[in-house]
View 1: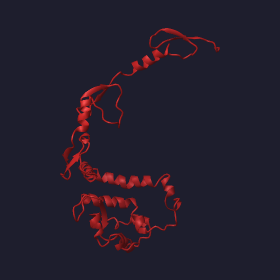
View 2: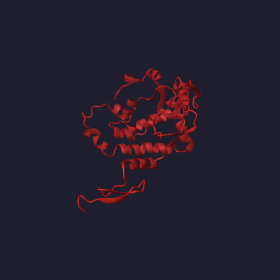
View 3: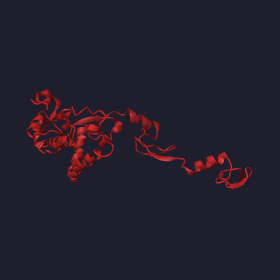
View 4: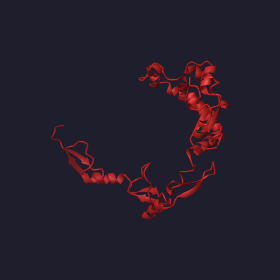
Length: 256
């Protein structure tokens, strides 16, 4: 076929025949192309009002993660001008205030209560040991494989010959985080001295530096295998003010 060849086509919208120099033309004009695009997609999309939950029709669909939409201006004004709602936390039975637009999302007064409720559901389902095993085995193996493994220890770009204290290195282990979580769960995420539920610390009754010296631990591999360090009975949950009052807080205990 030469450059001056004219092709015959049939319009997909109006079904009229037309000629064109292009071999793959589908529409006879730009208007037919636009009308066909409007015909393929629906003119209105159904949505639900964020205030009254009634269905309405809109020109554009509501994408995920966007602001709430309403069926009318009245619903929009009621939604944003409504006063805050008081709700009762199912865990601690404390009354807390939430904005009106979060009435169906906020169920607990704090993150600690939400985590308690989550772990209660896990215990009721009987999957507590299974989840802890996955956290202990799967996450550790995943962190120590691949590119991250090449950057540990001497292969790290900021390696300075191992000048970090052993006490500090042990606290960076994954098993230390698991021991800390188990202590919090046993004490129901409350301070054992004053009963506070704020920012909590997992304190060693017998200091960690003393345990490292008694068991003759010289590196983190030996610490990871030593079960004496990870005894839950040697831990207690304390808030920051109560932790500072102990005899082993910070510089009071001898650092290894």
